Image (tube, rainbow, N blue to C red; front, side, top):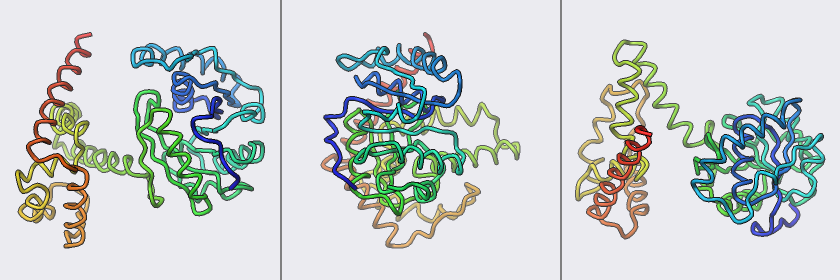
Length: 317
């Protein structure tokens, strides 16, 4: 694909789609000091976007606005072509309809200047199946956010078979520049990473309710007052790394690996091969870096206390 502009030279972003996700992106980019040009075919798009941005602004103000950030930097255009005019990046957030996505991305591609990366907020489709109608599919990537995009930092970035590696790399760098946490995926995986993890928990929860094994409230409490307190700190992998004590993940897998075959979930467990075991152990060691088990325990404990205090304060108002 043609050369793209440096991420720190972009001052205008186009957002296509004015729903909850699209509006969240608009609010995020405005708060980071960008000028945002938005388009949505709905006749009430401007009013809807104004309400979404106004609702998000207090939280964004509390987090800290970039110099020059202003809600007045939002322009809702009459046409798609006007929206992408002068934009250095395009974020598409249309409804999850494959035919719609295919046509819209082709339309965006047709009117967007060369060298501008176009990202889709899709949560369910791979870019390979969405980019089929575009003339220059090499600049199309997935930039999958989490609701609300102006508060949740994670974005999963992945290209399709026709996407240029340069576009994927640029999109990841741009998202980081605007304050996002980025996972750049090597391959397309249905549902991406975080959604697959959420879906596994969600399905098991539904099974438990359907079988009368737990109430909705019990399931929520099991997460909010249980492992959910640890996950913001170290995630499920490092959490089990600490469950192995001083022996870490290696001890955990070697001693508790057989429990994978226990009927604790309706999902089939993968075979714990030596290759899988070693990959998990090495991954934990790499993630931990120079932090010892004792360091990680101390970090976890401090963070859990802070999370409990913050959640308690929020609930008390």
